[in-house]
Image (cartoon, rainbow, N blue to C red):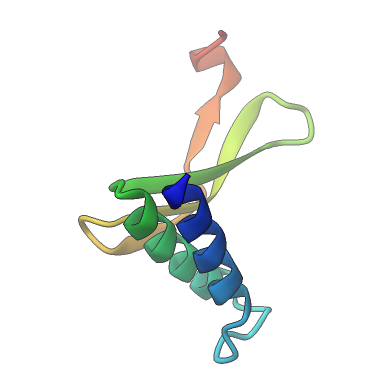
Length: 83
């Protein structure tokens, strides 16, 4: 439960950051990623979306705490992992 509370606090804090331009989604996602992995004590976070035809998922944000790198656009095809 403490992790849930801390995570909610961190998300609220990030949403109030004034130095971020809302058009700069990569900077915003990097900041979210940094805070979420720290609060949850994990090494990596990814956010995936289905394409319109649902034949693949595409990463809209990946953050790796070990390398401190943000990336996106990784793709996983449904045909490669049918289940």
